Structures are given as structure tokens and as C-alpha cells.
Image (cartoon, rainbow, N blue to C red):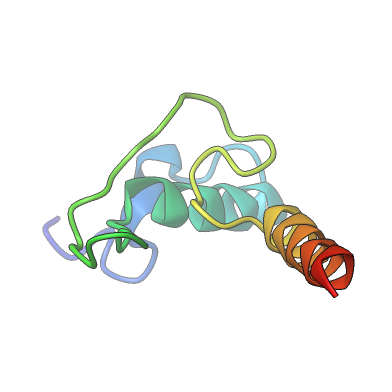
Length: 82
């Protein structure tokens, strides 16, 4: 019984319930949820959960939309300074 969740790891708690595609989506979410992130200011790998929930950039510190907005703001500031 010890080898039961060797391949599916974190989603082994769901066993055969909810369907394969939903379990795969939950697996991606839970892996990013429990991961440790690197701090952009000090460089330490100690950052963990910030808020609860799974929508938007809750578990990631740099979501794709946030990176796009930051780069657009930086570019607009550079144009304004010229």
C-alpha cells in the first residue's frame, strides 16, 4: 500500500473520484500552491502562501498579467522621461 500514490503524488487523496482531467488541473494548482518561491528583493527561497483561493495570481508571485502590466508601466515611464 505504500506505493499507491507514487505516480500521482499530491492528488492521490482523490483516488478515482472527480475524473482524470479535473484531477490533473488540481494537481497543477496544488503543486504551485505548495511550492516555495524566491523573493525578488532579497533572493531568499523562503516565500510561501500569500492568500487563500486559486483564482488569478493568488499562489504565484508573478502572474502573466502582472508581468505584462509592470512592463507596460515601466515602458510608459521611460517614454515620459524622454
